[in-house]
Length: 263
DNA sequence: AAACTTAGCAACCGCCTGGTC
DNA sequence: AGACCAGGCGGTTGCTAAGTT
Image (tube, rainbow, N blue to C red):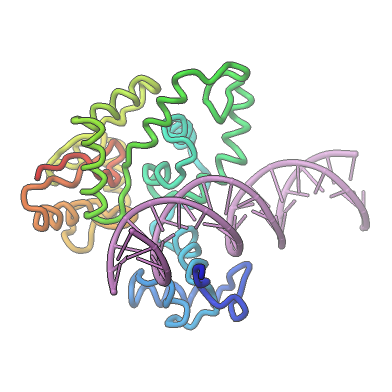
């Protein structure tokens, strides 16, 4: 038995992408959007594995990527998020607009690890080198089990329900753990109507958004995050789930699921 | 100038998860 | 219930440029 390979390896290119391949992939996704990665290579005329196309698009070709060096603020945010989430690079990336999980992972391994070691901090535990891990590590693990990102509304609902089984107030637990480990990092989740979303961002982020004009093409108001407009998603969610409240905004204005669910 | 080492990062691999039938 | 599939994630590899001897 076993799983069939995602592609026929004998007839696929490997290694660095050429300019022509990039152009084909960009042109195809512009015309058809992101969809079935398995069938995309053939449809786009690429001799590549679907996974390879997805990686190339997400990590390099996506138009909303921020290129260039990490700022000091981003460094510190990554460190704090890593202390809470561990090696959950995709979750960390979800809170750094324009950065990818791969990019952050590489940056962590090449820069931040060294930076922490030079400060005498163990990058794995975020505690002084040589000190036993203690209870805070368990707390970090517990925090990592709280899910922030889900791919669909259905998953969000399922995950919130799962969370509710553990705690009647999941965000309070999260806030508690965050505060305990990083008292100066505001990761408190909030419920707010879409119209007031900018108030939840904090001024600097709102200014950045305005400067970059990252508005949704559909409603022309909500923030267009790396995947979709939160405002439109909120509207869609409430349509589908009746009185369910599925969307919230974290301190960076990025996608924050699983905040509240009323059945 | 050449040989060697190191750092940075794009890309790959294998595993896991969730959805569908 | 379980087999299969697609997408996603984290760890690792390998190439290349920069730095050092």
